[in-house]
Amino acid sequence: MRVFVAGASGALGSRLVPQLISAGHELLGTHNSPVTAERLRQLGAKPVAVDLLDAHAVGNAALDSQAEAIVHLDAARPAVRESLGALRPVTLVTLATRPASKPHSS
Image (spheres, one colour):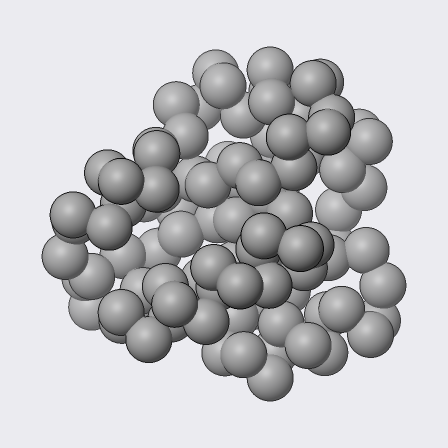
């Protein structure tokens, strides 16, 4: 399953991303610097540069990712939560119970 993770390079995301990848999911994760982008690449995720303070940009990035699931781990920014809320992010429990699909070709 293609999964967009807002906050992928943060404290929670950096622990969740490897688990989702090892479960067979294709990950696209937000980052805020070249260092965290490279870290996401090394984990096997596709880094997505977006300013998490710009809720509109985050919503657009999530839509552009064509993800089947959206995980919001940037709880400190209510505007992002509201922006992604309209896209119906899945809970981690829901995601964990869904089988991984074949990776999309980009």
